[in-house]
Length: 267
Image 1 (cartoon, rainbow, N blue to C red):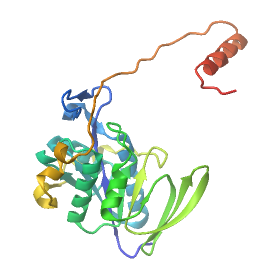
Image 2: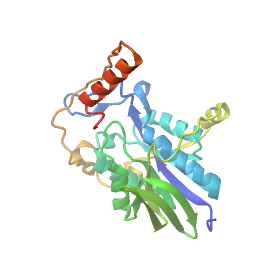
Image 3: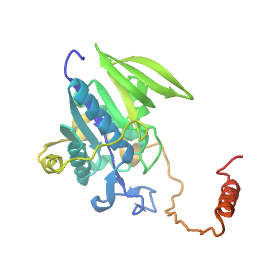
């Protein structure tokens, strides 16, 4: 048991549907619209981890996202999945921020909100795949980060974690607060009920801007981002079907041959 009800903050992101993503050719920045956006898959696992801890220990779960006004959609979805409160960090001066600046904005937003015991993020976002925002947040807040979580127990201001480290499981004890990163290996995301979906739109969304978190305009957006996009390209994958004829033995031999040819089978 914990000494008090925990405050868990989960960073989520609205990302373009990978089949509909469009890119600004001049800046290399993804063009984001509400119709073509979804919750980043790893972030759904981050919400599930927070909700499972809330059910075990008692906690208040806050979902926070940085993005334009239509990013409220991902916050309502987070509430349907079990978040209690929602925060939108939105300012036109933040547009075009790379992962480094995004981490700075989120960390300053977390400091502005105040009391927290755990921060949970997805491991990576499918629109950039840098897998670095969680590390930036931890660095800016000067707190530990733990990934590849298999098991977690919390008591007396500390967490005991079992995490996959290489080919072995490692036992870690860490003082609250700290950052955890979740992905599809962490848990299985539950389906929201119809009543959860209905009630989520009643949630109040708290809004933050640059005036709330501080800093100067030149620190944010494209101006403050050290990452330079040299070129960008949109592409899609297509699959072809090949039918294998013959007896079961011939089909098996042919399949094994093809798997070896494509370096899927190594022996």
